[in-house]
Length: 549
Image (cartoon, helix red, strand yellow):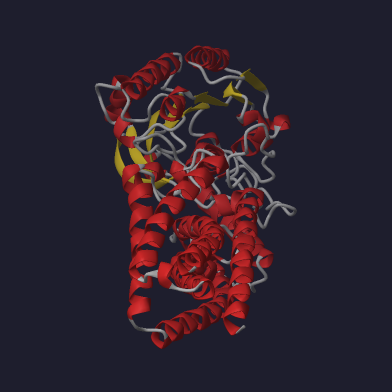
């Protein structure tokens, strides 16, 4: 009777684990897609224009997904490399999630994904993004009395406030021909002289990465070469003695194609700037968030209100008056942002007043990181205590049940983990990041198959190693449940760490994407492993019943 009660309790527990895993996985991803900045309903106040411009016109050419190594290949992009050699260049660094909408938002608001209030994830197929709620390059330039224009795919018109956009040329599909049409339209905007800021979006490199075999396919370089010719076409229409061009990317791509995660190659992008107001040279590393304040500084517009980067003054020829105005504007902008952030996360702001010879962005951003860490640590402590209780309970069970049975169960668990990661990471060559996730269906199907393969091999080791077939049905079920719960407890450790570090779901701040992804991958495994354990508990009992007759 006691064995029967334990089996019933075990089955109910497996059902609960499967149910919790399902709702945790869906809740985690839904909360990531739904994430909004703490400033969503109270936009940070925009500052006034900083004064005299250093350039009459700034043209930004955004080559979607262009990698730093591709951009530096003179055989693939000869014109861009001539610009690089003659003018200013750097390597821009971005943050996760490393999707297009997030890169665009950071480039054009100066705010990282956590604060900029752009989508944290690219919208699902068939859905649209929301318009930027925070101050941005288009708003700052328009508010300074200048005009803006955009040419490229329709995605950007979902996020740019249309009342701050004076002219546009929009294409609905991502084709080579539409890139050519977009470049031609941007050239006309430039030649007209009516628009002080022109943004051109070239999309075919990203398309090649996603749909034509990735970076390792020859069509990737072919797309980059075509993009290089479009850059040359646009720059040739400019008067660089009075205007400035900036060539950037929003993210890189992994070799197989894809982005979104924390992979090193995805988080670096090329940056080339040429024309009036630019000091030639190779400048090393910058942040993606530095681009927006650099654009507005060139045009004398206000620093975007949520900017967390700094204008690249080391690359610019600015007068003492322009530098002084920029420093004062940056202090005010950063102070306003810091105080707004402290209020938004319910932390008392400290009184910070940097002197004019200090870097205000560094000081205030450090202060923002400090108050963020203070709140995060206060939330992590109780989760850490809960995780500690779980770990102690697991250690107690393992020590209490040590012996030949436990050794076989641990061996089977080790085989499961080895087979799962061999299949996932080596045979399928997937990354442990969002960059390999093509869709929700893709990651669910892949994880389910890999979990099933690993489970079956582990089950066979446990079943024959412990000779479960010689046991009576209830004893066989108990042995199988012991294997299931021991394995589930060990498999769950990455999810437990993600819970401690990030919380169960995304709330007021974005998670650490590396640990979150491992946690999510683990939760999917728990769901499938628990479901399979239910089925194989019955199979083990049925086989034992027949062999015991």
